Image (cartoon, rainbow, N blue to C red; front, side, top):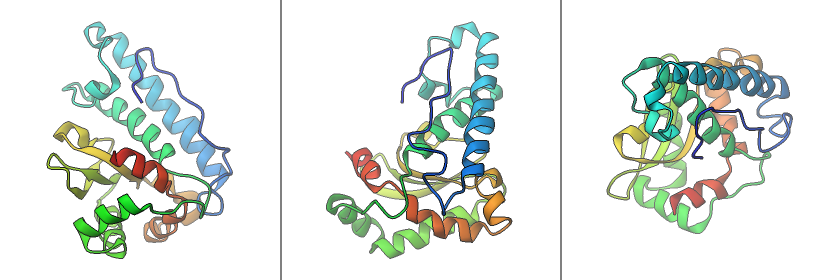
Length: 197
């Protein structure tokens, strides 16, 4: 996922309606074509005014002290990661290696899911919940605000859910918990295990 300036919006790795009924086609169209596109466009505008940053990788920009660069770089990176974290409903399964790591870190897959959901629901306002591999190689759950990215703290993201309202409001209205619970049905566990390394 190492993009370089000028940035462009990649197509989704599946059709807009591929995640139904968990995430509806209209939400995917608006989320990808409007919101993700806006982060891409705004990042390019911010970079135009900061030529010294144009040679940096997208990952390096996540820690920028310029809000317009940091926030929009996060919007681009986080969404690319989010799209790749999902697949058609109920086609993924947790592999043995990942299951072993989840059980080691959280006691059981069910306990991991409960704690991940709590992080997603506990994020006040807009943001993300993440499963990450920390600096010691252990798994942990984090939550970040807005388009912040946990890589700036030296961890490796494995899975993320977008809990900005535009990610779910058309279908789930104000019921974030219903969205988070349903979202497990579209998680691309093969991709999560691949990221585990």
